[in-house]
Picture 1: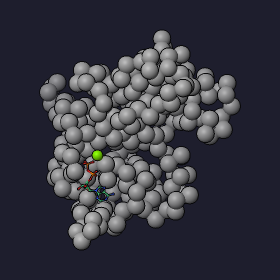
Picture 2: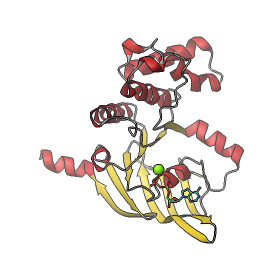
Picture 3: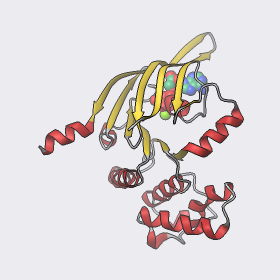
Length: 237
Ligand SMILES: Nc1ncnc2c1ncn2[C@@H]1O[C@H](COP(=O)(O)OP(=O)(O)O)[C@@H](O)[C@H]1O
Ligand SMILES: [Mg+2]
């Protein structure tokens, strides 16, 4: 399998008054297609900055980001919009569901933005809700669902456009710990089934351990990369 994400000597500096904050201070790594990687670190360590760079939402100060063979650090705003539409899905901490739309309408929404006809997009959304085990909740409004169910709608909505890569920033940050684990299990099995690459940010070591690899970030630097898949294979030997 090839590398779908490559990051080389990545820096992001913010000027705050007289000071310079080194939010990313020379980051290098590669992620393979189909991998589930977690970026873990305490608050202020640079996790969101890194994810926003990878997703083309913010520009690096210096360095290279190659996604699916394309250098994104030099793209214009319009090209970045196209890049995100073609390659990327997002799962948000606060779900970002539309309160006046039911589950199936929420999941179908990204397809509406792409001009997919109504019948086809509802059919696709329907399938995705089965995948995230919300078959009985398709007509429910967000306020008629638990937090865990709402985030499963969020997962279905990220997947419905069939992106190669899914980015998730603290996707279970608004859920209790049991529900978080259930959503993690589901997210993990769904992305494996669909052979998607998932990059997730969390401050929680236990949730990070669901990933194939865990990148530990501290003060804008990757200080350790753990291979959880190998660890799990040793354990079952
Ligand atoms: N827009 C910004 N302007 C100035 N400083 C920022 C900005 N965004 C983030 N930072 C700083 O960069 C560092 C990393 O932030 P962030 O990536 O949000 O951390 P995390 O997501 O790990 O909590 C922090 O010191 C933060 O204060
Ligand atoms: Mg953050």
